Length: 222
Image (cartoon, rainbow, N blue to C red; front, side, top):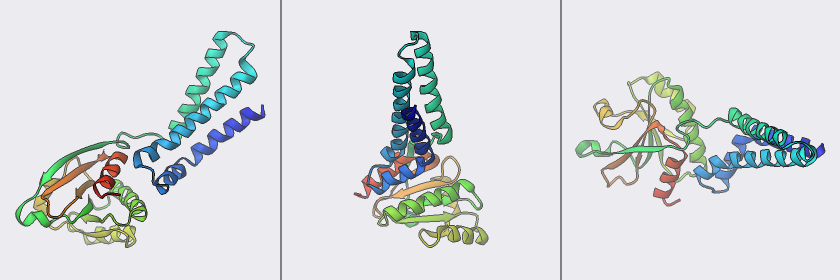
């Protein structure tokens, strides 16, 4: 009974500290993709441990049908609880981008590094800004910027306040460029590996996931 309770407690603790485990993986230098998967792997191991302890203590003397039924309930119930508490969203592991080429005067619009193009008052943009701040703390050598569109001074100040001086925030310099670089709504993420190169990588919010961060780290040699 004690081992079963300990298994349940272990699973509950892993679910509660899911995001902390993810952050620990990043702090240890693991890839973004593996750090994202790590807490799910540990939770699955805890479910298997719970199943093993229940099976050994309560199911050895019962019929095969009951053993299978209880095993399925534990497996699907435990994994279901873990995913319900910390769901995987469509864009978590995405890396769907397109290449954009800017020439002439527009070639210098985006500085080296990662730039988020954001709408005033956009909740998803604020979420992405918080994510960028966390990554900037881990990898301060990656330049990060925010461009706010619509020439809204109040929105600009709101983003600067949220950025806390960690991320540079400015107005989008030329609204005529938006149709050329923006895909799939806001926020959009633009990566410029080399200011001497005219090629940019552009992601929509749903297309930018942990694999995209790994791509940027690899491009930056980190």
